[in-house]
Length: 218
Ligand code: G3P
Image (cartoon, rainbow, N blue to C red; front, side, top):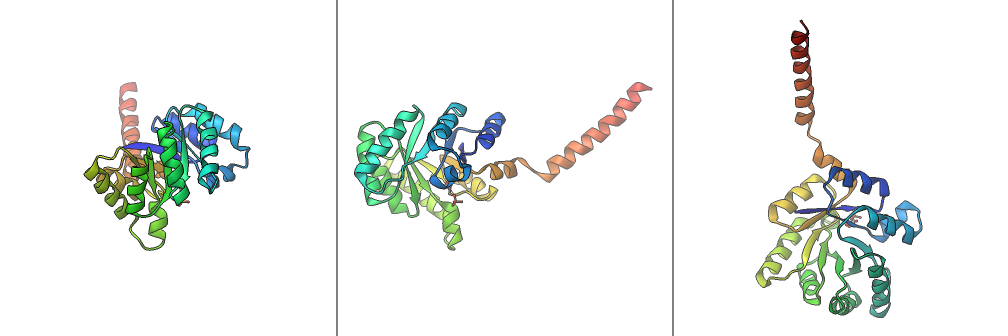
């Protein structure tokens, strides 16, 4: 399973890249706004840091405007992927962009039939938002499972990005059911690394090693 980092924060992207775990980056208007920086220099910097798909979201509502914005975003870097919402206009724009060879990540996907439409429109990626479904008492991961079944039934090549990930269990379940990608906030990456038994184990080994060193000095 590929791991993307879901952030526009340069320090987090640098640190995650240093871990060698990051295959791509996803951003959205909220994450960009959080950084308080101008859009273009920020995303250009992100594109220099990670050699993998970088999702950049268009903010237009009408398909014609989306197309123009998407083409501009795609020109920023060869790894740029245009994020479009799963709306009527988003689908129309995705279909056209796919014919132009521009990769689209259809976002804000909350139902399996929306994901079916995204694949039929030629989206390179589809982003089901599992955390936001959990928030309203729907099992977010059930949606991912349904999308996997549909895509397998028809050999769709659209890759599934498990998005709106809030905790390590989302990542575990995504991996268990065979999602292509999970896009994860930095805090969850840190949670994935940590295990108290690993820390206790390291501490114990180091203490025991001190005994060996003392003996060797005698
Ligand atoms: O990947 C989409 C993500 O950024 C949305 O997350 O936590 O706002 O639902 P959240």
